[in-house]
Length: 562
Image 1 (cartoon, rainbow, N blue to C red):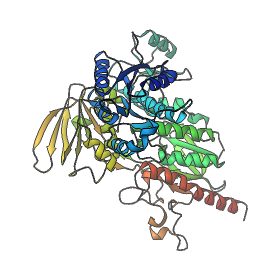
Image 2: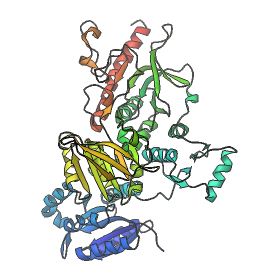
Image 3: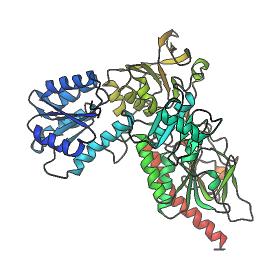
């Protein structure tokens, strides 16, 4: 049996040329199937699904004998919601079709459109296809080549947290039960007394009773490798888009750069299934892929990453040493001349005991994209009205039987980008319940039901639920910062002209992203007044570097008596 994922080509006038182009590039890894015309294409897709085939992509010529690619592709989600959808446009038809294609892409009737190659080596065409197939393979398909093994009993909450971390980092992994032959080998390597879950890393090290913090610390530099007496130019605390941008620019400009991240590098943005409004990615990019590329980019410039432990204290170095800051984590210390705080925010807890008791067993804080496959044909609820909630809903709708978004407000328009609101409205399996909150929930070992309350009438209702994803309002975690660093009433870090006037020096405020402590800067979501968007966080991370350089120059001048 051929179990390769399927690419279904629906042809028209150029069917032979299109098939030849796809077979030349993709026939080794994908099963190329063909059909001619709209009706035949949909029938063939239904047949493939009925046979249990994984349909990775449906690519259709725009001009078909019995319709257009738009007519076909907008009908595909009802047959196979996870397939990527591409309209293939002949060069001579492109001008006339462009307006309709753009409108269809805006409505999310397709993932993208591309011109049919007119000659060999049309790499722009294949780049568009490969990006879509890559995202399909990460979010839908199971990886065939893996770098990490996870051994656990089915339903192990600890193992689920580890898998979520690995998915967010973009590390393909293999899931094994203790009875699998390969698992026995891993258990022997772990030694007597080892506890599940077991994780074997790329380097071959086996972790017993593995936690996400243990795994991420094993992947990157361990804190015991921090050299004593070395003072970095920049320490970046937090590995979301703001911190990663700061790391890329700092390291690329020759500054010795270290990053501390308590969780997965990528932060909350790394959990986003697809970010469609990020500059430079017209077909969108997943949060995982954006974080992965940024992490690799910073690493290639020389930035070092230390993960798995949170920063717990920040204080100035001794007065008899060169001017710098000490960043403390449990059991270790980093020294740096400047510090960039980019810790972002965390999702608020729901505060409903029956629900919070089931975290990891049907209840998840954040998008938890790794769990989407587990929600196949199930009833899923999402709490939240921001972009993260909208992205999670659209992604989960490709798997779940029904997705319901619960929001306190009267609608989504105030808090969610318009493109996501339109996409949600165009997805028949997504329902939005406004002015509704969760007041109770429970189940036998995992989530099975929720009790909802209408905020206008006070009327409760009980509903079956297989999954609950909580993407509530966010709050900063700044309790570990020094007292002299000013925060606003909500706990966000104040910078620039927003800091209290009594902290200004000689009537001048700190630099725009500088805190009340010279040499300590704040960027991204943790900063008071920031936009709370991926692009703006990245922008602030890049913008902080001139301020870092200016502070380092002042420090050098003081050290050398200039």
